[in-house]
Length: 170
Image (cartoon, rainbow, N blue to C red):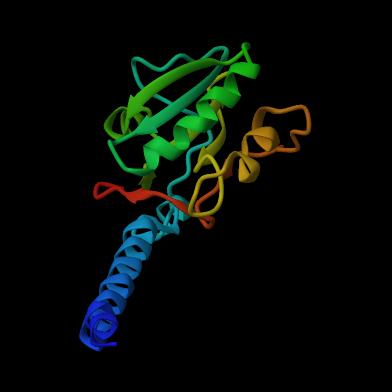
C-alpha cells in the first residue's frame, strides 16, 4: 500500500502544474491578442482621407492593389488574402512599405493594410479582414473588388477591429 502512495504526485506537484497551465494559457491568450484592435485607433483618416493617390512613382491609370507591410506578426495572417487576389488578374499587385504609401498621400495607421486604387482614385484602404485571425471568411476583398462590389465612394475602413500592428508615424 505504501508503494502506491509514494508514486502518486503530491498536492504541491498538482498546484505547480495548475499554476503552470494557467500562466501558459494567459500568456498565449495575451500574445495572440496583443495585436488585435481597432485598425485606425486615433481616427487619422477622419480628417485626412484623400480621394486620390499622388506622388512621382504613383501610377494614375489602371487598377492597382497595394499590400502595405511592416514586418508585423499579422502579415503572416494577411498572406492568405494575397492568394485570393490571384482571382482578379486585371489588378496589378504591389508590395510596399508604410513609408512608400505615405509618399503616395495615404496615411497608414496600422499594418498590414490593403489599398485598392483604380485610375488614381482610392477605392479602399484598411485591413484585409475583420477579427483577430484575419480569416479569409471575414475578408473584405469580395466587397471591394469582387462581383458583389457595392462601393460608390472611397472606403477608409478604420473603425473595424482586426489583427494589426499600429504604426507610429500615422
